[in-house]
Each structure stands twice: as structure tokens, then as C-alpha cells.
Image: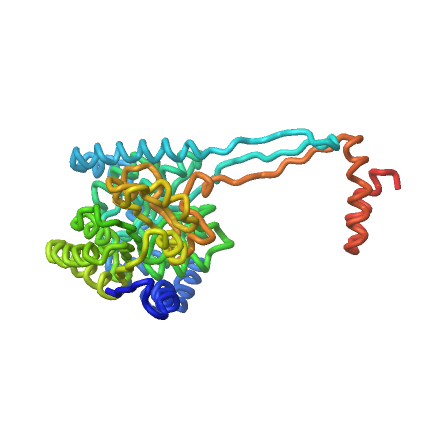
Amino acid sequence: MRRFRTTDPGFEAAFKAFVEERRDTPHDVDAIVADVLAAVRAEGLAALLRFARDFDKVELTEATIGVSRDEIEAGAAACAPEVREAIAFAAERIRAYHERQRPADQWFKDADGVELGWRWTPLDAVGIYVPGGRAAYPSTVLMNAVPAAAAGVRRIAMVTPPGRLQPAVLAAAKAAGVTEIWRVGGAQAVAALAYGAGPIAPVDKIVGPGNAFVTAAKRRVYGVVGIDALAGPSEIVVVADAANDPDWIAADLLSQAEHDPAAQSILITDDEAFAAQVEAAVETQLGQLATGEDARASWRDHGAVVIARQDESAALVDLIAPEHVELAVADPDDLSRQIRHAGAIFLGRYTPEAVGDYVAGSNHVLPTSRAARFSSGLSLYDFLKRTSMVKCDPAAFARLGPHTVALAEAEGLPAHARSAAIRLGK
């Protein structure tokens, strides 16, 4: 864990270097991913079955690679009642939040008599990658599938590595509107969704988190299909004053550290004594977590405590441009208005980031690795596309045509010019 003070000489350069350091696992995966994608594109289902045997040590067939409707129903029914209730609660909140994002179609006539507008339509098919390695992630299913269903996507295909599908994941898939589930993971799953493979038909967009191989595969298939983003390790910045319970703040920092040894947790506070109390609380709680090994590595290698005046905190947050920001201060609303770059902001002492991961309703698929400077979290808009609409009557075209001819001729495109000129009788 690193300690910084904004009053230290060279603070800005040192802190910027810390924020920008590479935190993803340094695997040389691109060549492997390229081979996997090429094999699935060329061989289809045969490649998927071979990779399941070689990588996952599972024997699959065309009949067993898909998860049947009966399996989904049985798995969902086996889910603990309190978890099923929480899934239904979360799904409804996520749906309600994202439905409010729905944009309106527009159609209007401008001053030249041209009718213009735009129309929003949903994607036809979306693929959702759901990791299956470290834990079961029903929240990943909900956050990716519910907005797609709310947008009107008709086909939502979920892929997840072979193995036992957790009841909570199946319950979430049922609640979210997933239409099909396939037992395939890794780069080969991305390839199957992009190109199609046997019974798996191609989709139009792939969303959802994954490991370095999944991320590299998404990068390579972009253009064949759309993708949501290239996700990096989880991040949280907590801006907290001394009026907080240090145990609460320690728990919030560890809520992201436990995701991955490469996750990043940063505390910004104006009180050194409070910072020391939080650090002590972190150490105590690390010894109590089942995920303590990963959380300890994350806090040791990528954690930080920054001592800064509260009026400096917004600029520090913007420099970090983190995935999550908690504002555990007396006036979080005012501070939030000063922040420009963050995936999601959690305001007040009773709004831990964890509620955003599960039940707040906002999406937990958020930009990482400083991408909040130029991108947003997953939303309804990721599952919609906008089509421009243009309509000219003869009078409107008479106004637009001459300018069209002039610009086309200036660009040296005579067919463009003639397309307009011929309608002007020239």
C-alpha cells in the first residue's frame, strides 16, 4: 500500500505514475487468442468441443453444449428463496432504471422545408459473457441482460465456461430474459458469438466481463460485432472525512480489492489520524475475509492512502478517473458536482459501492483504467441504434440541391454533383 500527501515534493508526478501503472496480468495472450478465433471460424462446433476437452477438461457434444429450458427451470428452482427474492428485487430495479433512459424518436420540418429526424431500434441479438472461474456472478447476468431485454433485444445468448451452473446464475438468467445459454468460455466463446459455431448463431454485439483471453478476443472481433468495452481490474476511490466509522471505510475499500489481486482501492482523506485508523481496520478485516488472499495482494500492490485537503479531492478523483467513487463526506452533493470523470458516484455515508453492484438499479458495468475520461457505463443505449431520417419535397430539394452540387464539385465527385443537378434540370 502506498501513502501520498499532496504536500510532498513531487507528489503530482509520483501519484500520476501510480494511477497509470499497468495493473492487468502481463500475459502474452494475443497469439493464442488469434489461433483460437481462427480455429472456431474455420471449424465451428468441432473447435468448441476440442477446446472444451483441452482447456476445460470437459467432454461436450452438440446435444450437451446448450443448457436446456428444463435445466434452467430446475436450477432456478434450486436457488435459495432469499437469493431468488433478491434477484427479483434487483432485476426490477435495474429494469426500471434503464427504462427511464429510453430516448424518443424525433421527426420535424426545418426552416428550409426538409423533414428530418431519427429513429431508435433495438439490436436483434446480443451475446453476454458470464465468467465462471472465481465465483458465481448472478449480478453479471442481471446487469448485462436486463438492459438488453428492456431495450427490446429479441435474442439474448449467454455463454459461460463449462461446469456446474450455479442455481443463482440460472435464476438470474431466467429473471433477466436470457433466451439461450451455452457451455463455452474463454476466447472460443467470443469467437462462437462473433462468427457462429454449430448450434450457436452469431450475434450483433458482445458484452460482459472476462479474463485477459476474453478481453483480447473481444478486441479482435470488434468490427465483426460490437462490444461494450475492454474491461480492466476493478477500482474504487473513497473520499472520506474523519466523521466516518473507519471500519465502514475499510470494508468499502476491500469490497473492490477482493475482486482481483490487480484491483485498485484508494482512500482520500484530510485527516492523518483517521487514515491510520482505516489502515488498521483494513489489516484486521483482511484476516477475516475468505477472499483475503486476493484482497491482501490488491491492497499491498495497488492500494493507496492520499492525505489531501477536501477541496483538492475532486481534482484527484478526476486525475484517477476511477470506476467507482464513494463520497463519505458531510456534503457529498456539492463535491459530486465538482467531479467530471468517474464511472459511478456513490453519495453519502450510507451509500456503499456494494449497493451499486447489486440492487441500486444503476449498472455496475463501468469504465476502468481511466476510461471514464471518455466513456460511460453500460446502459440501454448500448442495445439500441439510431437511424437518421431525411425527406425532401420538390421545394425543399430546390433549396438544398444547388449547395449539394457546389460541395460535390469542390470535392471532385462528379457523380455526386450530377445526382443533385439532374433533379434541378441541369
